[in-house]
Length: 238
Image 1 (cartoon, rainbow, N blue to C red):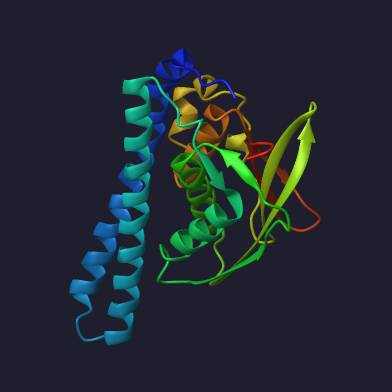
Image 2: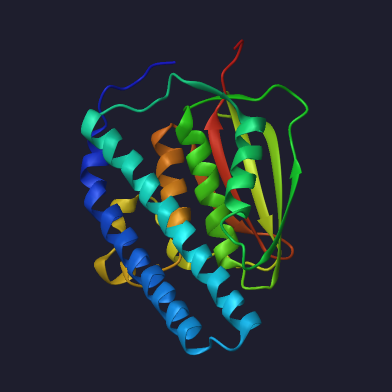
């Protein structure tokens, strides 16, 4: 597989990505501040205080993940390199992403059912594969407003234009696909649209990372709910 030493499109899109994520971070920080205020005013209500504390903890973990992912994008922009030559076991990467994403929501009951590939699933992309999957899962869970979140994850192989791809499908029956995710490239998102995309930083980061690795990020409705698809280029004979 050829590895590009520089991606000019990442330079062009970087300011838009930062703008989108900054709006999300401001919203998250405000949620944390509101939760802390409620906790301090409700010191006698132990259960309520605990609930707000867990909510604040969740928001902080989400914020941390977003910033860590942005640091990776910053580094890639600075060096002009993607870890496209580093191979990963996709089944294992998905398992770790599930554990990491579920741990970000101590205030909610999150159930993630995995149907992993029965074949050896090797994809190119190194740590970025795990980061894209974690952000995608985090984004789906954030869109699900139910108290008990249930997400189905399936890993399978597909051929796209005679190129082997490994596909991770995230399905949630309580989520509708946001219309604001319908952009083809991040650069086409208008300034006005950015302020309406709060809560979707994880999905946006997952889309950018998957595409920079030569894969894709797709969304669509199902019979009940929505499906979020992350594609990675497969490696034959690894």
